[in-house]
Image (cartoon, rainbow over all chains, first blue to last red; front, top):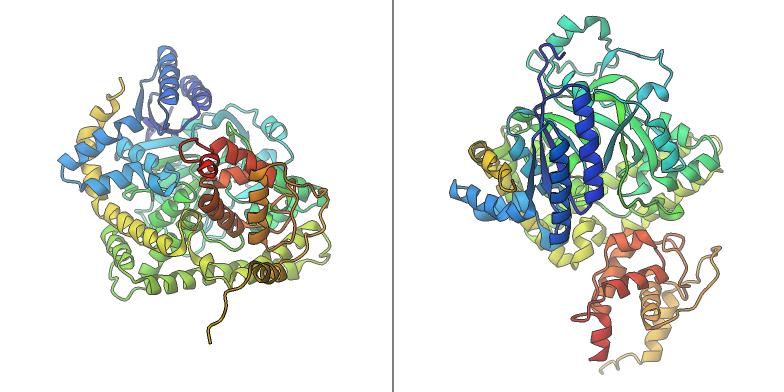
Length: 502
Length: 118
């Protein structure tokens, strides 16, 4: 049924502290893969900290194994030190192996990125699919929200992903739209690894180019990642994102004052593309459900929580400018176990701050402007650049971060001022919120501490936060340097790692 | 000529002068019920530079942002020896809600109550 397409053989699931969600996800995945006759193996990376939760997860997996036609493997945090030792035995520096697959727990940073790194090592060079444990295998489709005559069946290529948003007042309403069964794995296989030539030869009748942007598609261009949309909880850390939506989504959100107030409070959205779309940039990459071409994903995640996926996507594009991203016109239901909502006046909360991933992303981007950087597409080059930054004095790093912060906030200010200027009637709550956001930006610009990544500032005083940032830059630089060695080692070791919990 | 240190009254006047009135919000002003809420109220007033705050006032309605949360968490850590997370604020961004989190997180070995007892 899959013709000459790449077959996805490994499904990767990062999980932490929520056995009920893992069970729901596993059962849904097994049922979906069986219904569409796929043959896969499932690898779970269990980051649960408590013995009790790990035991519950083991029981869930044991139960699912007995009903599953697919092999299911579990690698838990209790195996991390064994894996670190294995990597060290094959020449990887202990501190680097530790940082890469265990993260920086003493900073209180969530280590989703570390879990993903372990999964990347387990997935190897093969095509893989990764799904978060809090998804459910029922789907909504793009043409439920956009009239089907527009681009139905076409594969379109964009410079940026044409992501749209709809907003719902409750999870019940959002999940009501997720009533379709689709061949989830097959959908990802349909575009993963495809090239322009492949498309021209085989899908010409479905290929329609709009807004093609710079002609960077070459015969070697491939779709390195395919990305599902989500319906349900938005997964956003901050409601500020609402203010920066594209015009079409913004118009939907602000159709009335009531829709705006409901929308920014509920967290329940549909994030989707209305048709198959290929983009040159990853956009705000969300890795809730994505497939990757392992051999092209040659760099690690920054082992932190918030934004590690955005940073990963941007780094991929910098390292391999020729690759493309495919966005699939379905949405997987996203149902966190502990749902939260945004508070009405929370929308300006993150105005004065910058996240660690954004600071590091901008620091990495600056390599392209570094006169010493001859080859900006090399992992080694980024590794050296990060380690050079780590050697900066506090004063120099403060200056660089200040510049990055001001540039980021200037972009936000310009965007919001433009949005405000465009509005004919500025009486709605959305404009009060924009004004409040702009006020907070103005106050924050006078506070030097604002440029320090918020995750570090939360736990440390400013001088310790700078020190920790320098350490993280050094550690991430070393991880980039050692990652190829870790990948090579994993080729020989991963079968053993997968058997650790059997 | 050496400058004499400020008296507590002078400090209070100086600090008080930088504080503003509680914004007009719908939540009725409610007083703290115990020592933990009282301490948190003082921290919130310092950080948000407000003269008074009710224990049911929502941080975001008072104009609070992530930096304020960071400053509050830092002072809670220093003065109450408890590590509150961002998540604790999101669950219930009020003094009452944060006090519940502090009580929950308060470990006998190193917690606020223990420190107070010492």
